[in-house]
Image (cartoon, rainbow, N blue to C red):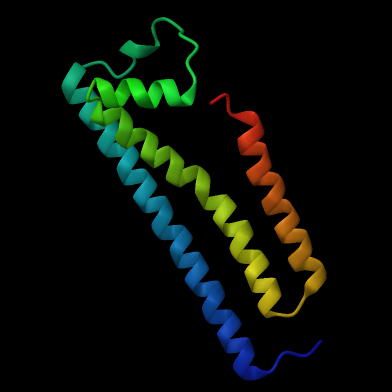
Length: 128
């Protein structure tokens, strides 16, 4: 299937925007993680202190505890992890959009199926 030069430029620009968004997302996630870890280090002096004993807690319990205890370093670190985990999911979704714009239905359906599987795995795998 031949792609017109004008549409080819539009698709190339979209791919470039996706790559810039992903790069920016990695920088944002890295900065959030770094800020959270450094803040934790300056507050307690030992960032590994929480890991001396294992306590099984759900994600919501951890977030609720951090909010109640005003543990902003932990909340910032968790935000960085959320951004980092959402980047590949966003990439798969935007790849599906790119295939739709290219009118490649088979690859678009496959990309959205992978996206649905990723989203479902997060909801099925997290003990909320």
